Length: 269
Image 1 (cartoon, rainbow, N blue to C red):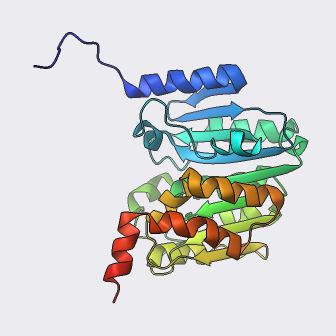
Image 2 (tube, rainbow, N blue to C red):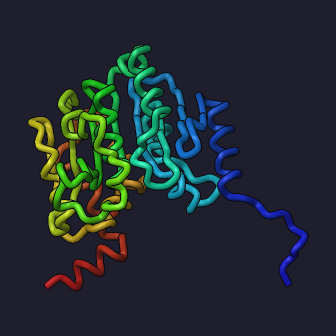
């Protein structure tokens, strides 16, 4: 019989404690509001990675779940600022916006020679694109981002109708507009998915490259979240060698290891 006297461990509380220890030792960990966290890991580096992630995704990996981009810190000796949401908030938070604005005003972002913005998934990608307005000259890598969800800007979008009441598209700018000052933008998407393809088409900046991975579906977002893809992709961004060829080379083996992607390939007509 199970030991009913054993203490119940809340993985969320343990996760907060674990990231708190990392922040204490290496930079900062802060609860910005009831649904948003920030982790800063500072290294003696001229490169900063800024990532957007979901705390609930990390909890699923246990108390030691680490945010997107963390593996790049020891691999490439970069600093990391990770913003994390509890649920799909679209990072519409006065506290998140205040933090980004304050860092920009204080010259934090421009103190680095290179800033890399990364995010995976519609809501995280939406927030990362908008954050680029605070970080001119950033290099940006987004997997399956949502440029907009309102009926006005994305009438084809059917996945987030309930979220339209909160109107995460306002105030402006939209993500594609905020990316106007970015140095390089790479959008990963599935051209066979109508919503995914429609969102990718809204990113039309001259410095934007859209890379289609047919039949990838959600495996594309999962691939970017895997260190086996993210670490080499970050390396190419640090070195300035990220292009269609190097991006596909980094992502292809990780995608092919995803069972759902393999199933789609085997079942395609």
